[in-house]
Each structure stands twice: as structure tokens, then as C-alpha cells.
Image (tube, rainbow, N blue to C red; front, top):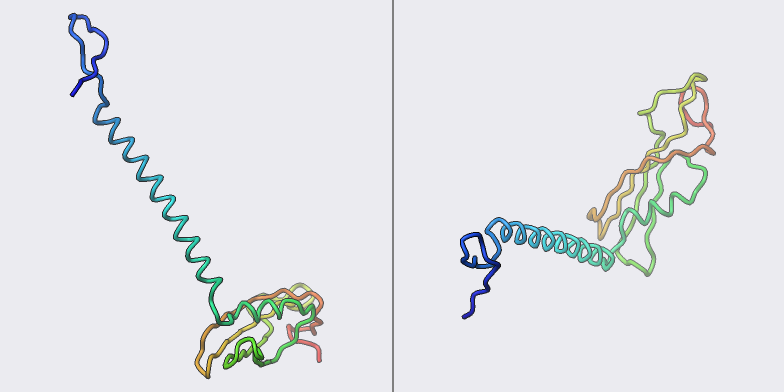
Length: 147
């Protein structure tokens, strides 16, 4: 085995050329940080792909349908997903959100709370609660809704 020789030092002898322990430790540390970062990104990608492959409806699907409505009202609603997801049903409950103080005119801003429950054969499969600002929804003084 051949040892690489460096340049001559002041004494006339050659010093062996090699990495110091500190340089090796720093290089290994950088390598492992890069590997853990790559593995973290990979696991997030795998988790995202799995969530896209779910073969069941989520409360977010119902929330997306509800957001298309410009005027909201208090009340409840329910339904199913037809032939797309048999044995799945959804229920919603919409209430005026009371966590906001009325303005100077005594009217509460039109913020609604939508509670969504997805059930599979009667058991809760998914649930979600959403706050929605609906400026087109009429309100009466004191924070209640106009009928």
C-alpha cells in the first residue's frame, strides 16, 4: 500500500497527506443532515400520495361544496354521496358564530360556524368545523338572522 507524501517540511522530512479527524466528522455530519432532509421530504411525499388514494369521502369535500354558496343561513342539512360512496352519509349544522362582538351598529358580522360530520354505516368517519365569513347573508340588529 502506498502512502501519499506531502511537501517537505522545514526539517527535510515529508509529512503524510490525510484528512484530520475534525474534517471527517464535519463531512459525515453534513452527509447525515442531507440524508435526513431527503428522507423527511420522501416520507411527506409518501404520506401525501396515501391521502390522495383514500377511497372514502372526507368532511373537506362537503365543506368545499358549502363554500360555493354565497348566502348562508342557520339550520341543518344532510345527504349522501350517491353511487360514488355507498354507505356514506353527511350531516351539517350551520349556526351564526357568537364568538365575535357586534359592531357599532349592533349587528354581528356575518360569520357562520359550519359543523360537518361524515358517517359510514352510522359510525362517524370524519368531522370538521369551519368558520365562514358571509357578507351577503342578511342580519338583524342584536346579532340574529333576518327571517
